[in-house]
Image 1 (spheres, rainbow, N blue to C red):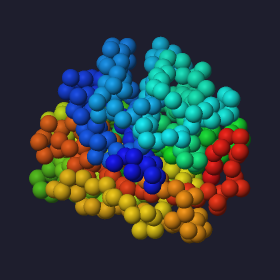
Image 2: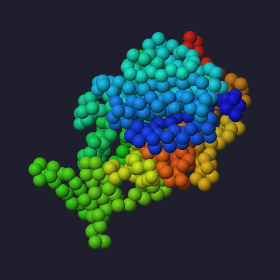
Image 3: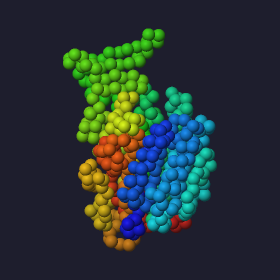
Image 4: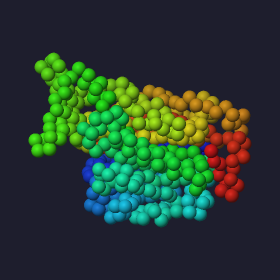
Length: 465
């Protein structure tokens, strides 16, 4: 099946996952997570697969080293991955270097039917054919096949040992070049501080860091190509606006520390109804009385408060969100549908793309006849999210052998524990994406040789957009 699909174009799967909790409970969460991941691979049989992990190794990396090695070995040697005969794994394991450590892990798997794929050497400034399976760790700074940076400490001075940064790789598949960027941005250190202003001070910090990354990947050092940036952006809802909306008719009680007079807690009560507590807010507490508001209609009512990406609307594109907030799901694997009461639920885990990448997307009806990706019948609405983008000038004759169709299936992972619920109704990962985690989209990338021949770099044999 994969071989037949390869004739029409390469199926590409992009996955982002903050996997910190997997290493806190490897016997339960890790096994379940891998099982569900394999089911997605088996169901869709992508030809090129990119898995971007954040918080790889968990909170205590040194104590989790054995679990990390086991996880990587399992992924590379699993029977479910036997058809992927080439792989590149980049793990930032240098936890002793506070100056460089990001805890990012990037995995790339290539199906045996995919013949022509190259990876860019940033030092030699040329593409190299990908063969075999290779793992790089420790000092990734010296690895020429990627760019890795940790954000400067002054970006987030509140955190003494931040592990936020990015890893960038560049690939060429079927003569199309693109960057894949694994990213982890700064979190909200305090709900109380986030609530003070709109937008919050933390939003400004993330804005600065993401702007830095985007400037780096389009600077003059290398030829510009399309790019996909996916990872844990830690984007949050506008906390002040959310609280004012959820508690519009409530009265607020302020509790201060006796010794410093610092605000340590806010309590919002209904004006009537026996002054029922609606929301309790502390530095690391966001306890709203009714979590259904974050899940009803996939949290659509809250999207108006998801504003952080709007600053980059001229530089980044994202498909419509049609899934509930991906964070912070309970770390109790028996309560995969519940949010923890630590933070206001938000869409932290995202897959974004440059506008040039967006222009490569072709709506299905204008492409070859292809199979739609679907999930289990009891939780799917086949074709619920499709892009309506078409570049009519890309190719005159869509049956021409010079035209290639890239099927791009983009999948978000939310909290690792949320994907490993023991609830029997949520045992399928693809099912969980549709029901209460995140959505699956079926995209089609369309590249026509003749229309972009003028941008061909003959030495690198790769089209750039």
